[in-house]
Picture 1 (cartoon, rainbow, N blue to C red):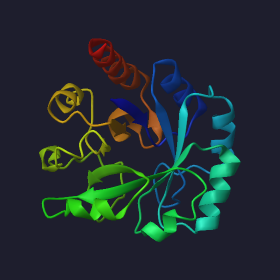
Picture 2: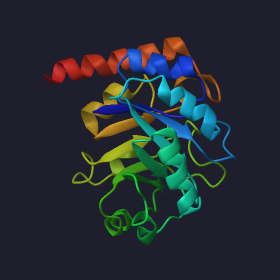
Picture 3: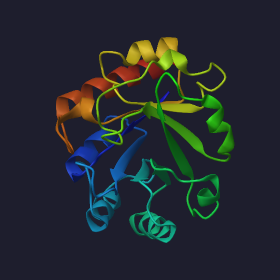
Picture 4: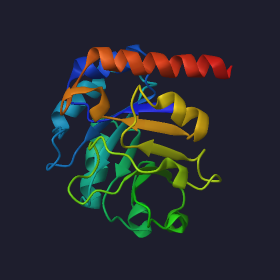
Length: 206
């Protein structure tokens, strides 16, 4: 199970994630987000990171050319799409895609089948905010055949990460607000705590 820390806005937070074993970090290029980061700031942070730490950019209904431009400029490894982007939109992406779906008790998981050649992130459906809410959906709703493929976001924390691993066993988890002191400002102790838990889980897998 891999782990991504999203909503990075500071170099020291990104370096901390790298030092303690995060697999990926996320930059949010959605201006309405509390964790928004400008392209040049993200580029500066990305340059300071080791080459094998995955860098993901989050976008919401952005112009295709702009997504591709930012991804190239920053040196992203993947783009994460949180809007109403169509499968046809994906075909024009120059980087690997992670498609986000908002889930509630009425969500139709067959919708995911329309999206090929991409990874899938499942977050709680929220009409007010797109991610970073700290809220979760019922992870048991995820069909068992999809679980190893998906990234779970929303409400993931040090308090439930072991349960998520043992009962759902997703391909990855995505954290943001649960490891912050305020939006976009990561809490060192919370980062270290959960990354050490993940490290122990991985060691037990071996």
